[in-house]
Length: 422
Image (cartoon, rainbow, N blue to C red; front, side):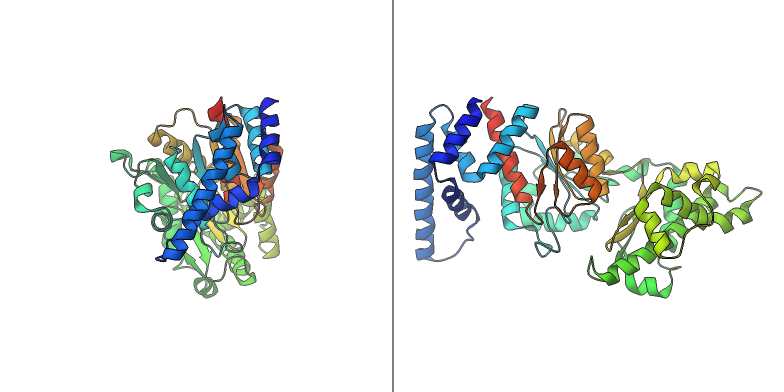
């Protein structure tokens, strides 16, 4: 209980709230060409240093740690960190981070990663903690905003890896031949042929209302339709629901053509391809089933009616529905877990204890993977999907407000400081 008693004393005897405000001002104050303003910044820095010195003097054995805790973490954050340390007895040695609706939020941060969050990430980097950005976005999009937000030096430091398109590729600058790994190249030829067929038709064969209402995201492998409307809007929801049904039908056609196109029942199979795809994926995902019902596209068969060779192929292909955001076809053999494992391998992380931040079903797979392997903790924004929130609440209850990923980073900062005390 000694550590708990010390924390109680720290936050009872010292004005940690003012200390944090001073630290944030020093860390986040934008550079300005003003002598008066810079003098004020220096005064704040001096006040901060004096207050930290008082804490160091009050805690001779761990003063540096406690002065940094008070300056970086609130009382609740510090005690949460201490609870995590008591439970796991180790600190976080790698960050695994989703981007959209996790680090940034259209509803909370104007789709920009907050400056506080970016600064905290640079501090983790300077402390030697590798960062794995794990996203469904294209590589070029991710590289662009990371370089803009974190700087070219950090992105190309050799300690940052990008798992893009939800696990189809991994980009880790500074690692020679391992810098870019195209994981989809390892898939069987028949699966790659199915994706090629769907991609070649997805826009050209689309009804006019879909062509006008959505676009094909520029992925290297996955087939992702995104709305030409604001994400989350009623128009976006309507077009993505139609796009999901359309993609299921295309996928059914492509699978039947690749797997059952040479059979004696080829013509009959082609007629039933759409129903088979709808039935199979409706059984896999209640959200997909709900969309099919609302669109009047419920199949005239059950998943039990799908022929075994067709079903076996469906079992290798993922159809993901993100309400009012995207309809996507991907490979179940390529997901964020596979990408994260590859990133760890390239980064040389043999014994990971990761902090996984995310909001969607694809992030949940990584969260469950680290939980099953005693390899980390999970955190999610309060607006994450229900399954994600259920998992996070059942484990360590690390739920943060929209656009406030920095709150969890402060807990992790405190955890790592406490772990270093032994």
